[in-house]
Image (cartoon, rainbow, N blue to C red):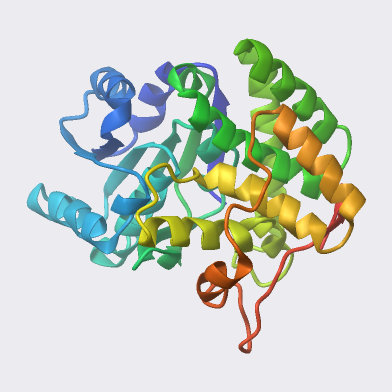
Length: 322
């Protein structure tokens, strides 16, 4: 696995990037402030902005990135630097992994969801006809630079979206971090306040859960599938909402929160009720918004499936996910 660096500030990137002959910056237009700061500090001349959101997580966006790299002469000695949330890091990682059969890339995740989950672990992807992450590669970033400073400007729904993935990590790992995170998120939901120290500690702990699992199973042949807890339902919800033009769709993390409750409902109603109560207190949705019948087409195409059957990740208790 590429190195994962935790830092309170973006300033440390300048030293990290000085060893690369040429750096090509691709960033989410919504975080242009951070991209400009990085480009200025590290004297990066070549940059490109992209529109994000699931509707833009497509092969067409990947090809736009390829054309940008080709036009400006990126080669195998270059580094592509992605700055943005999970959609950005997935798309840029994918583009770099197939450009000239693979060039180096680094990630600067700027959302809570990407810092605790999406930007860690060497999976890249684009969607296909609204089906989540159907095209992609396993490709390791040179580094992932996780910076607390980038979370200051997150919108509330983006923060909640990342909170769901954080809670998922702690449900998988067990121990005291789940209750610690719930307590933090309940307070945030009431007062909208947090400190860099407290949130930074939770982000690092959640990221390390994923790092440890990925180190044991980099190509998702076994225990790494645990990280898909809640995602069979979540991806189906996202597919349904995108294909039916729902005007206010759930974010990925919100859909994962619903999916975790549903996964628990398949094994233990008491546990499902606990998750529903905890998640709701953190400001997350918990009720399945659509019937199983309309979600089934996407669940049948889920990328975890084997031999024609739907594979679920189930939770029996905190720390026991199978």
